[in-house]
Length: 121
Image 1 (spheres, helix red, strand yellow):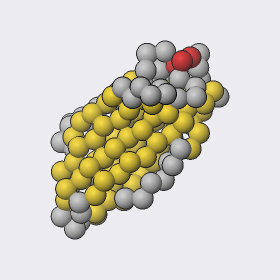
Image 2 (cartoon, helix red, strand yellow):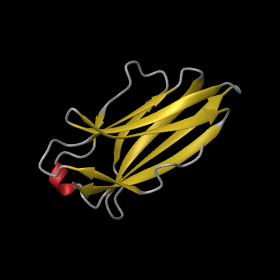
Image 3 (cartoon, one colour):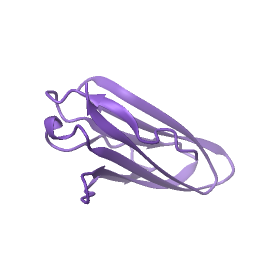
Image 4 (cartoon, one colour):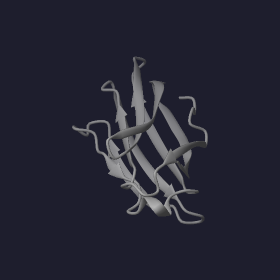
């Protein structure tokens, strides 16, 4: 899978609720994922799951949106699949608003590592 977020800035409202991340993996893949909040040398895990999670998990990014601008969010997805193509969708939201959606095209065994930087809106 090709990295497409590649450190892109994603604007959040620092006065709003904490943003969330959701990772959804197409049904033909066996996959595991994890997401991290990158704060300097600290990388706490904020979400982890697998392709069979139903419904897909929606995980908060931190506990206070005002502390997040300047921080990075990274996700890793490892897949084991046949040759059938499948999507991996990463959705970043805040409240009822979708901030950004990244759709990756997976096929076969693969590893995806990507990230964004959170900035003030």
